[in-house]
Image (cartoon, rainbow, N blue to C red; front, side, top):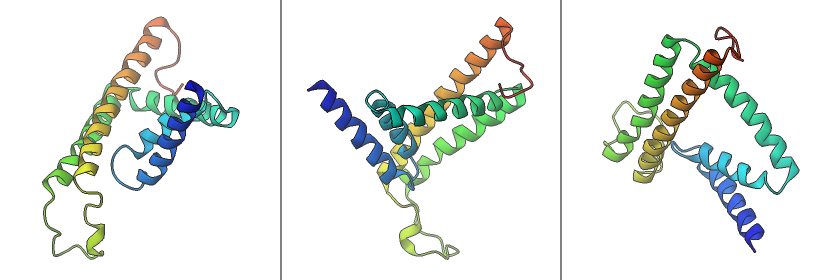
Length: 148
C-alpha cells in the first residue's frame, strides 16, 4: 500500500511539474521531487536523478566558487524569487506590451506565491552549496578554482 502511494505521489508531482514548468514558480522543483520519489522504484528515474545531481552540484560549485560569484548568485536568486511580488501585485498590462493579453503575468496569484517559495528554496540551496564547497576547501578536497 505504501509503495503504491509513493509511486502515485511521485507521478503526481512529476506530471504537475511538467504542467507548471512554463509558469514561474515551483514547476522544476516539483518535477525534481517527483523524479526523486520515482527513483526509489524505477531504475530509469534513478539514472535521470543521478545525472541531474552531478550536473546540479557542478553548477552549484561554480556559482559559489568565489566571493563575487556567491554575491551575484545570491543577488540574482533573491531577485528572481522576489519577482513573485509582481504576480501578487498584479499591475495592469502596460501599453507597450505587444503580446496577447493572456501572456501578461500568466498564472495569477498562485504563480506569485510559487515564485516566492521557489526563491526561498533556491536561496537555501545556494547557502547549502556554499557551506558544502567551503567544507570541501577546508578539508582539502576539490580545487576552489574549478567547478569540481
